[in-house]
Length: 233
Image 1 (cartoon, one colour):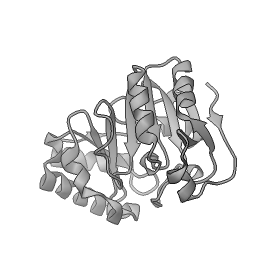
Image 2 (tube, rainbow, N blue to C red):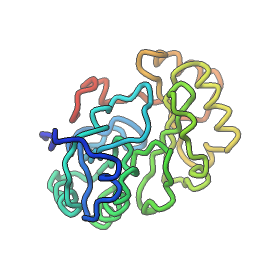
Image 3 (cartoon, rainbow, N blue to C red):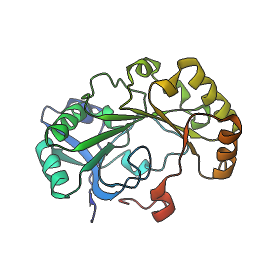
């Protein structure tokens, strides 16, 4: 499926948050295979919202920081339904930076979609529709954005949600392992560990997890294996 994309002028933060119309700034809408988390391998519609307040050093979607096109929320839902698949992933950027993302999530659920939200965890997730699977990417020290983690989100997570750590080093791994114990995260929801490309090898991370008998799921991003970092895939 060809991605629906845009290259219009960048939106300022005030435009993204304060526009009075029921619309969102969208970088692209496309269908591919989900590359990670619980629904990995399923054909999925991705709705990539424009804008992000974070600057993680390993970010692979920096093209979503600026540009995009304003879409009416009902038109987004119609485009998603037209793709003909069950799963939809709302991602970014940081989708929750646009407050009306919450409206989109609710409408997608109302339309009968299986909805997931990929979020940095830097913004409040409490108002997200409870039918949505919240995939929270906890930022490790190696991300250069660890100070942006919103720890108040952790007690809100349920078995429907998921936590992801991108591991950049042995230090990141040990930090994440300590956090798991401190907050008893593996009893709250599924936890995924992924290697940061070019910083540690997949085998290194896999060996650490096996050696420690750590109750987390190792994952590699399928879309990167199949299509590298090609936008719209």
